[in-house]
Amino acid sequence: MTFSIVARSGPAFGIAVASKFLAVGAAVPAAEAGVGAVATQASANLRYRPQGLALLRTGLDSADVVAALLAADRDRAHRQLGIVGPEGAGTTHTGEECLDWAGGVAGDGYAIQGNILAGPEVVEAMEAAWLSSPQAPFGRRLAAVLAAGDTAGGDRRGRQSAALYVVAPSAGYGGGSDVACDLRVDDHPDPVGELKRLMDVHELLFGKADPDTLLDLTGELGEEVRRLVAARGHACLDTWAGVENLEDRLVPGRIDPVVLARLREDGAPEGA
Image (tube, rainbow, N blue to C red; front, side, top):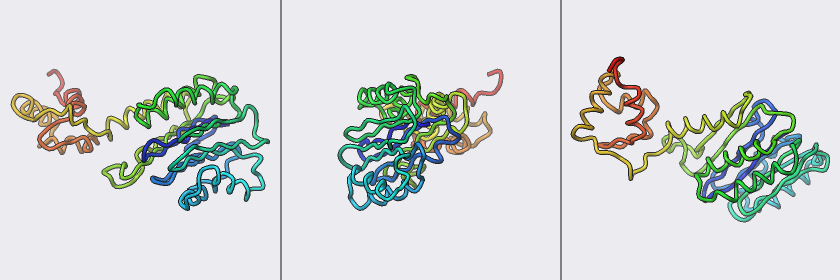
């Protein structure tokens, strides 16, 4: 009922998943920075998530973690599982009682799996998308893999939910956590498309300014920014940016063009 990728990119780990199932992001993914990522699906065993991460912390590779989880599970024939650790290949498992079509592929730093799919072309398209985009930003790369599977037929029962979960050291909001991205579309006619829209909003609000594009807040530009901020009823750029949830893009004495574009769009009085 689900197709997913678990993957590693440098210090980051992530999972992208979609399904004809309510709130798939609440059931399938788990990841921990510096440790690895787990996806449990088909007849999902949610205990695999903490147990798999705990086993990865001991230094076991992904294949040994999968073997250990399955050995202790009398319903393993109904399970599907993907795991990736800090090094080496990912591992995917499809129990013999999973509903057709079911299967997966794995390679260095990734595992892709799905069940009740349109056919093997779904995971084949996902793997091709992963291998063809090594330079893409990690979250975007995972989402593109999910979109490739969706386009290839995805869950043969239809669409309902999707999720993207990415962790990396201190990559969360304000550096206060390791959760770089935790986006969920719980019930939607086009969940993969909606996930992409949410990613665009996430990048706008929480993406980091490119230092090569920053503009000095001096001269005419500085005056324009002060005028636009005042038109919004704020005393300074920092206050306006905080209200707009753009504070992560602020740089003292300079301005991110993304922030400037939003300010110009929203800041001018009506009729200006």
